[in-house]
Length: 269
Image (cartoon, rainbow, N blue to C red; front, side, top):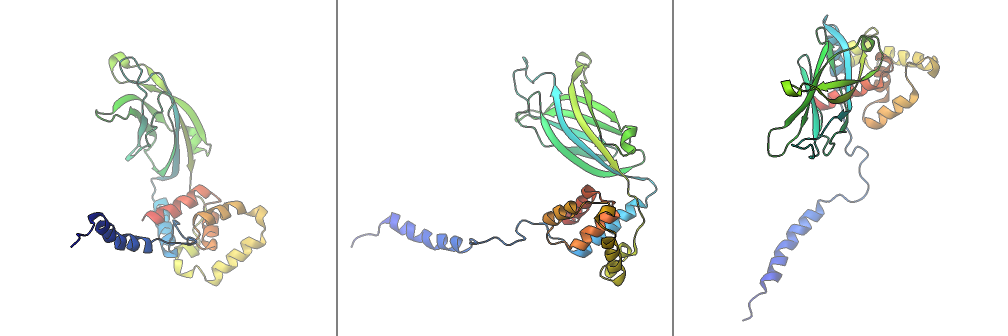
């Protein structure tokens, strides 16, 4: 009797498993909501109500946005400054702290272009910023730091960008280690709360419809936002009703960034 070929037997055992995996593969066109954020209308209004509660806090100032753009450092790491660094930034404003992604291989000219938005309350006036060189086998190496007082121009509505000097910590290294470019902006929540946002159940009521028709009759020139902004947000959130986006844009006076942030926060909650 001839014994069975062990390699052939092994291949036969793999075929059912391969066919099973292949049957799970989706062929053809992807669905329109593939990798899209899906939110329920109730989630949007619940999140909006939560944000409105924050606005009623007497210590709430508004929404602060900071962008860590890039840095120009004096030297690389290592005894002779020959090792190319992988820098990242860690900063804190009040109780809020963030860390940028690592600019791998960024060396003396790292770029992050990382933006962060958070609620700003009274007392949160200064930003403490540190830069580190990420190491694989040892503790991350400190590069420099700076303290930034939020400029008056930011609170006046201007987008403010400035190069800030980075200083060392040790006595023999307490000198300029380079500069970092920081961009800041600030937005307050203006306008009254409409009844439609106080009660999500009446979002399709005649009051909401009449408000929508009135806004349409005023013409695009009187709207606080561009039609292109509505289309952009619709593409980002295809499952959200267009009227909800329009209502939010009207509420936040055409600030597209705040509306997108509101919708993203809902998707993460």
